Length: 295
Image (cartoon, rainbow, N blue to C red; front, side, top):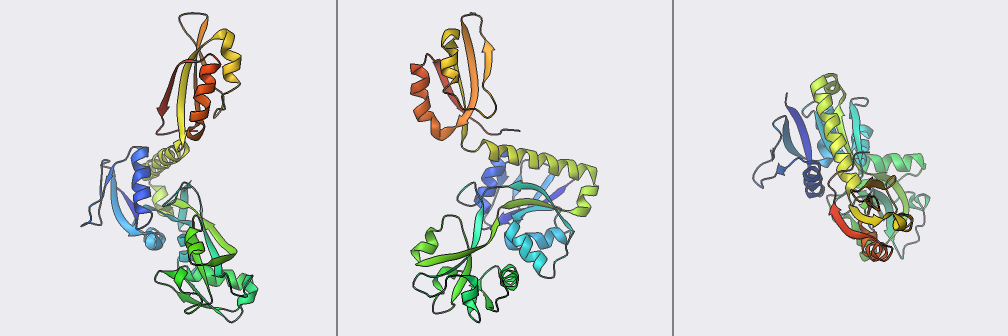
């Protein structure tokens, strides 16, 4: 069994390779090849632009791949087949952060445009042409939607009246003095598969296992494990300080007067929490990294 898996080339590539590494799959990308190696003999990788991933998975060239909801919507809004793609996992990560991205309608700060309806008869530049046309059709606004090959933020007001562009933080839009008028759609990465592939029990199980590990790696992002020992007389005070994914694990030690506490916390809270735990009676405090959390 060989699972043909598409890895997104471009802005998502590094984040995807890093996510797979945390999930336990080491992908080795060469600048001279579109076929990265992976340390799993049951997977064959191919680098494909996220914009084209849905088409190749839909056509059966690839069994599965990772791409955004935005490009799935763009594919299906065109001549792409519907009902062929199945989402195996919803993976919330992007090139800069572990969060969703937004496609926004934006116009110059000093323009008179305040909403989609103000753009009647105007020109809108975007890379997401079909989904943008569908957005304006829902709002019953007639606009000219032009495909943008890149550097879309610099096009208003000379080359376009407004744009639909993807953003994580909004910093690029602000730098180009653009104001967000509306959110066209939110998107995050999906692990998708051709529906026919799921009829193969081996490939289906492999995809489900990959999805499990990828989601576990995302769940662990930004969290650490913390363990410490504490006298039972101080246990209540220590537990009162500890937020946890579920509840802290309390274990007995050889000395009945002591207990071990193990928990998972947000990494950003550690620097404030450890001194408080020490003051409350915690001893032998150990912070350790987490690669995966399987819920």
